[in-house]
Length: 565
Figure 1 (cartoon, rainbow, N blue to C red):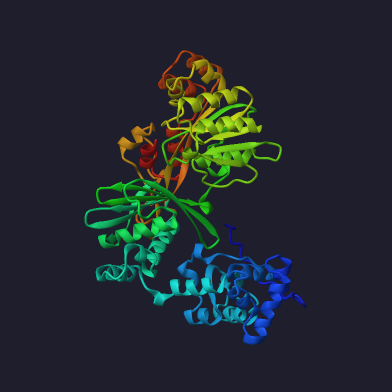
Figure 2 (figure 1 turned 60 degrees about the horizontal axis):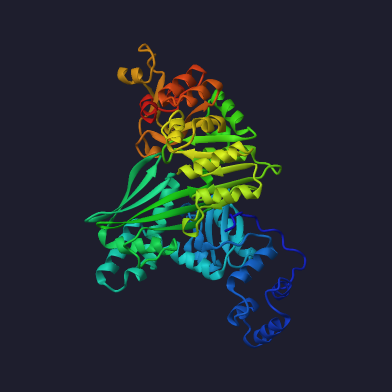
């Protein structure tokens, strides 16, 4: 789906082509079909577009798209947009219905509206006068505009009222769960939960069935926070609604399923990866939120200290070898790899990725999706990629010995390979690879660098104050006991951070380069402690040191720095 690009309505040309002529030029209708429609227009007096739709020659979407192209504005599918309540407040329901418009985005001093007739200049002028904002216009079908007005205005109904109305429908027994899932209250309830999650910066949405309630929780800054607790009676309808829009089989309740949902919040494109799991009290659902607006792609934006950044750049600029990123699930490994690919990406390089799943599309880079059912695994996909003349290969994860062997072989034959491994730190990756059946000399000769990383919560900027940590925490952080009071900062908790004192996260990193000294230890099958000691002796900054340094700069609490690392 195309990203929304709000554009102001251009000045109308002196003479614009008629709709029928434009449709003929686009190959959407024939001259004979237009002639038939014109005869029908003389008889009924209806607009030519409506007649062409009624005759079945074109769809309403094609008509709207043609009008948008002629006006020089973007055509949008409103069914895939979650409209922010702040935008709706600027246009009354009466005005929206009068002119068949719906406000979809506000970013003062500009307001973006979707409208069926983008040439209705008088309507645009009236909206500008009423809102005192500069109005940008996008095109949408008349039916989708009217449907959105019914869906979003609805007399300002609250979330609690939506829940109560849905419960009354269930108790009355008038509709099935599938029908209820398609009804306005459940549709708006699910959309409101999605919108709340995106606006709060959640990375995951949990729908959790319990014996008496249906719990919703959001993972924000790595921690789960309580969302709305829904009545148990709504569980089947909410589950069915999510499964319908994610393309799952609503009749299958005994097996795990996976799906995907795409929608927009204003200009932001958001994808949800949906997974279901049958439990004792019903199907548990977890939705991973992939918000493109929150994707940080840029080495300088990740949180590297200067020394580690220099080493990381040196590794990813290598002509061949393996660069591994290690850390637990949810530690930002994919973001680091995407940032590395973006840094080295150019028209002179062939870069191919093998991912499960492809989370974000990157320009120029060719991205391949794992499909186990079709036989596309990391191992089989990597074999196929090597026949496509790549310079750089990204393997989403080294899960098995075969994938590791192929990655090492690729690195030794002149390819630069990026991948991830689930270990807690950089030093633990080498013993892990050897335990997966790889010879130490192959590991030592193929790996260029290993990055260990974690994500650490940062202090809320709105309620940050100075404080003195406990002596035990200072000792655990490896700092001298006389560390000055007032050096550290913490968030007291406010509305901006949900009372937690934290808002946002930053990466903490360490990088282990395979130097001659490290190579000798690898050949001797040294353990991770010996490898770590050797790397520190050569100047490696550990994740603990990086986290404590960030705490000393007031970015986070010392307790958070110690807990994370």
